[in-house]
Amino acid sequence: MRVFMAIVLLALCGWWGLPWLKSHLPPQWNPFTPLAVTDPPGWMMRYKLQRLSHDPAACLAVMQRASQQGFVQFRRVPPQQGDCPIEQPLRVSGFGEVSVSSSFLASCPMAVSSTVFVVNSHQALLQAGINNRLSRIAHVGSYACRNIYHRQQGRLSEHATAEAWDISGFQLANGQWLMVGKNWRQPTEAAAGLHALWREGCATFGNVLGPDYNAAHAGHFHLGMRGAGYCR
Ligand SMILES: [Zn+2]
Image 1 (spheres, helix red, strand yellow):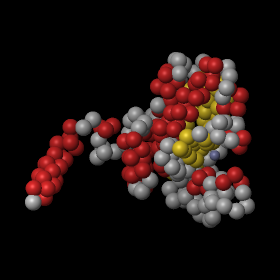
Image 2: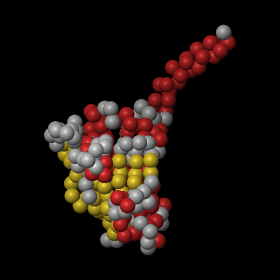
Image 3: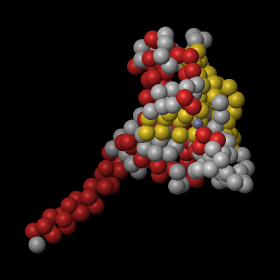
Image 4: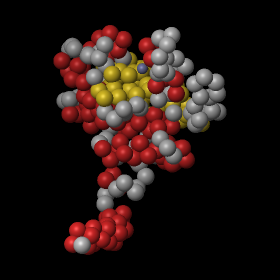
């Protein structure tokens, strides 16, 4: 009986406390506030991203808000049909001041993760002792209708649904390039910058694979949506 009363009491506290929590929690820690691309990476961000993947309208709203604030440039494109369909593809052509080597196709949740990644990159670089913003990202693609590692058999790659983005290098505002293939180990400063960006990707994407993972990733970071923090 006492246990039952305690459960009822707790439930009532939760019921009364919810409205208070909804209005008093800071937005980045409030599960009821829509995701903003300026939110810090972490488990709450991951939770909100997870929710967006089941809610195309809410996802698009996040992207539209981010675009109005100047954090990303994108346009909607018709759904992809065929073997590798995408319901609501977006074509991303830049992230505010940060240009990309070419525009790329992204599922809406992947577009959100990419924007969060670029917005938070300055903080990541600062922590690695680099006081320079990104100015350009060189990439080698996002959407490709294929199996993992181009195998004949096996499961579809994340790229088959534009749920992954392969980045080969980052240019800083001072013109310097951090190339995954060349600078993952040296010189020290460039390597520290790349490792910091790799770690940061890990907080925003479901999985991040780099040169330490295998030879197939010696020249690029694979930033994918599957998983919940698998980073190698
Ligand atoms: Zn990839």
